[in-house]
Amino acid sequence: MGSPVIQVDIAIIGGGIAGLWTLNQLRNRGINAVLFEQDALGSYQTIGSQGMIHGGIKYALSGAWSGSSEAISAMPAIWRSCLKGAGKVDLRECNVLSEDFYLWSHTGLTSRVSSFFASKMLRGRVEKLRRSDYPAPLSSPQFKGQAYRLIDLVLDVPSLVATLARQQAEAIFKIDWNRASLEARDRRAMIRGDGWELQAQQIILTAGTGNEALVSALGGSEPAMQRRPLQQVFMKHEYQAPFYAHCTGGSATPRLTISSHRTSAGEPVWYLGGDLATEGADAEPEELIAKARSEIDELLPWIDFGQRQWRTVRLDRGEPRQSALLRPDSAFVGAVDSVDNALVAWPTKLSLSPNLANEIDEALSRRGITAASASDLGPLESLGRPGIAAPYWDTLFS
Image (spheres, one colour):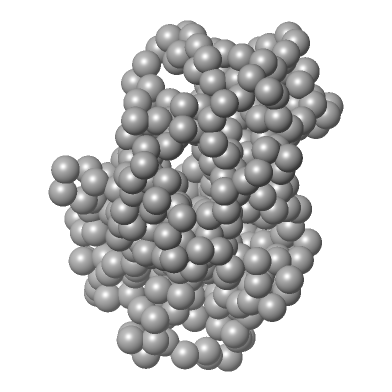
């Protein structure tokens, strides 16, 4: 007697934000979808996100609207709809860290950028603040620059992952690739486990940088992947006011991006990204920490942070390969070249997760995928369930 064959509409491999959002959106419309994750849900790239749901303004610091800005501009409104329970995915249980996100320039913006921010095109997306409305870290009389409020918001990523996982817990399974395999047979992708075989109308790969190995396991070479390395910096300190902001510099991207978090013991941590993280991707941690300390001390010299501790984390963002390693402008979904029932998906950034799920919906529709009868997932129960990834501001300072 052979192994039991489990039939599902969709099998998703990868339990970060891309896979979890897609699982929720598909199952919410009656698609029989399951998700497999080998580590903790949200590991690596997702848990390493600063949680910003942004509308592209940070890509408009050159004083012009770019392709990336256009693709992402609708995202904050879509996420806010989901946070109210009115979207395709229900995020009402997700913790919002801040409804406000700021942009500041410690020297003042160029006239071109200032006039662009004041243009009709950005009305409702960028608001120049009066000094009385500045966030606490910029409220010092010593601050002589300009401050703006953006339409962006910030989510607690562990809470986001837990919210998405909780709603579809019965369809999420832990997989050990030492005891299971992704295989191709007669141009059909399937998953073979220890005593079971899973066949799906479509398999969707949402494993971030792990997609590269999964495509290879299917004998494929396309879509090709690129890695965009980052090295982010964490500063644990004693200053209590939170801060969620970009600091502009001389480039078209933020010089420094700050988000605020707290360890499980309640200690404040600033998570630092922006040009600091991209330009310092290959630096030694001590070198990057020295640069981060210098940036904070130069840009916010009036703040007494008390005792500070520093850590860094290296992250690779998985993306579809672009010419000259350019940053992709939107979410990406592409067919694996070696089989007829597998798609590779990269959101390219947290904000674009709803865009990615919609692109997947459209790709499945073009392939004629419709909901079939529900199958018995009992043979998968012995796999167990993956946990939720611990945030770096806890693991690095423990």
